Image (cartoon, rainbow, N blue to C red):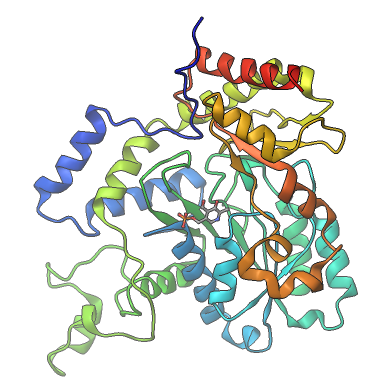
Length: 410
Ligand SMILES: Cc1ncc(COP(=O)(O)O)c(C=O)c1O
């Protein structure tokens, strides 16, 4: 069999009739900015995750920035003296960036090398050893690659130290933690619907929460602090509560009245329309990915002395197929990735350890030297390939054959 032409990408997005119809519906509606599709998507996301409220924004990064800003504003007194947020060193850098952009300090604790998640033991040890634990305001765990963090234990610690919990579920839509949806276990949780994720919109994100005040704040923050915070706008029916309250006072328009300084993080109906088409298939997408992980695990089992393969579970909604080269591996990550790419198997590094390996955080390198051994290790030896829902058996077999070819030649 000639397999030279096979290309196994990390992700794929297939545009069918339904996707085209969804986009055309938006075009035909005459309103392309945030409208009915966004509302519908928010309702479906809240329903799916088992949370009360969702706000769609233009990216997962914006969701993090707005969500953290909302918690700071809501719990203003508490946050006056608190500047630190405990988070993970192994994540897409947006988690940490959003903390910094809120004028807070990310504090990194080490991860479990198998699930890539920060552990309750490490969080607790850090707080117990901290000179001033009252400087800490929140914990921001990340369900990386779809692996759920131990939220019950994290929430227990948060309660003890009066910390907010920001769940970064960008990579974990549909993951179950003790039977509950990832993203439903915290003060706020965020999702990303970036093209590489399980539900794809191109660029879009969302925050979910069970707290009405937080939801209202996020709605304001995402639109330059404007005062509108109704679930459904009733302005056109003459029932806008803000207008009624101000009636007769002046030429007042709540849409252009801003209570505080915010951002423009609004998304468009196009993105929501695409995400809605993917949402319909979400169970199938998750199941296919789980099945592909199982298949790859079986095919690559003979390399498990050299490569840490992902744990298979029907509770995990896999973003990709993550692997970590073991210290005894005969090959380095760089060479393996190059060889795989030559054979048409696309790869990505599993994120650099933020304070020791990401250039933007090099001012922390010395402080964290030797403090995060697992994250440092995964940061230079972890990588991932695709396990997406459109992969065929032939393509999965090509991945397995590529590993065999590479390992037999070294
Ligand atoms: C863990 C994590 N957090 C946040 C984000 C940011 O999402 P976005 O790319 O939509 O801004 C991502 C994106 O991949 C992510 O993986």
